[in-house]
Length: 182
Image 1 (cartoon, rainbow, N blue to C red):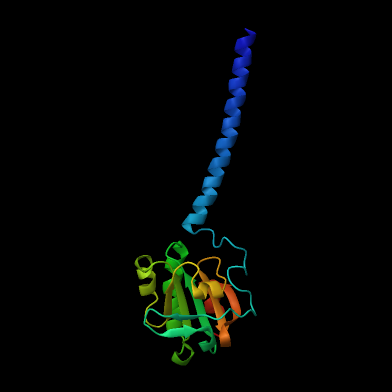
Image 2 (tube, rainbow, N blue to C red):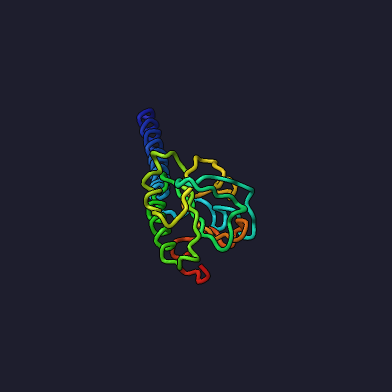
């Protein structure tokens, strides 16, 4: 009889322990699902998705999808900067909104550079969603522009000025629209 009581106690404790671990796994799966679905806005702290305000990136020279050359030293005036990835669900929403915002600007203030990170076959839709009003650079992970601006999260929006110096960073589309100077 003592053996049966001991065995039942052991099985009961084992079941409770298993239940505790199962609840922990379910909680973690929910967190990961939110991250993957884009409900969590950023995996980095605010202000840490790219170079901080006031910093100037290292020199870069790249070619846009239209064949134009863009370099850090050629950036003049206020320029909108956007980094997008096909692996990011928010990027599919932000890229067309970014292009629409640029299109609404007066033509003389219409300076924007979008960097789409990924292979050509993966990024085709994102590049097309940016339209003709935005200069678009396609580069692989760790490319020249995203490395120069130390991009750590997507989507990442910012405002830069002469020589590429960061004026605003980690902007949302709504925040970008709210800034009167742009």
